[in-house]
Image (cartoon, rainbow, N blue to C red; front, side, top):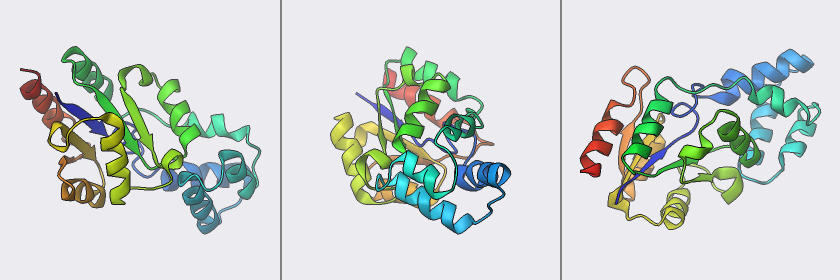
Length: 192
């Protein structure tokens, strides 16, 4: 059996650095606040599960109701729905491994129609550890119940790819211009 593991930001979702590209501009637009350091710090705390999303919004002086407006600014990477459908056709489960706020990740996966394609997810805000920490990869392996050599992990950040490779997971550094061709050929080989 084989299992494909995808990073969220920059792989499933188009924005590679959602904090810099979407969150900070959103907060600045709505409040006039451009204190990037405060926003980044509060986000890290929320993405580690140390504060809940409502507390995050309070720390950046915005109402929690702003959340859905912010999340609506995300979009899927071109080709990701085709990849997910291809994996499903070939009976290769797909997991999401992401540094994110748990509630935000859940909403994004649901709102953008990919939740039905996923066998599961490990989100930093739910498990209290962020990539590239070795522990988050160990949590993934325990939760998905596949052997290390059954996994292929795609991430757009080299440090995350290296960390996964260091524990024995096959990895691909995802580049938008190359798309998902390697993942599709890997699925084809594994599905035979």
